[in-house]
Image 1: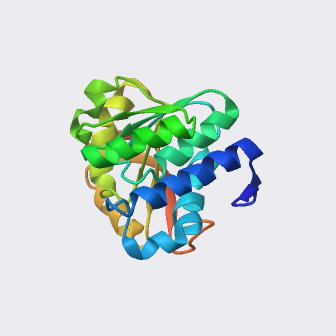
Image 2 (image 1 turned 90 degrees about the vertical axis):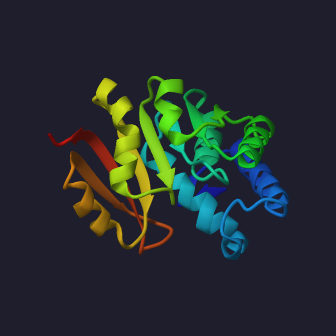
Length: 205
């Protein structure tokens, strides 16, 4: 099996397929993503989420903010199982969604843990990490605020953030309050979307 042109093992394929089955089962009773996008689960959500790990395939410690239906956090945790190290701490305050995420981690033998807490409390619960991911959560300025405590303790911290076609407006707004290094990756799934790779976010004085 290939995802975005990158081959994965049969074990990883089986884990992703089991995650997809769990997602479809749970989405009948709780709203995990926009209902109109469920039919495009593999391309719209799983392959799109896999780009995050494929841009940073090292066995590192991730924090995934607003994990919701498991994108990209569960997909990253499953792909980390293939490399044998690293982990994802998934932040999701909704108790039903957090329960879904815990089942996914356990049944898919993925590498991570779920924290049913507000995003603002995440840095206190998880003191350090190497990378932060988020998808369809908040604007860039707010996301850098959430990540600031980790960035203060780790100058190598990276943020990898899915953004839509209006990303440039978010970048310009964020530059009003933040200095940061930016690398833009055009999505291989949706040419109107990007993944913004942010390094060294510093709040302007």
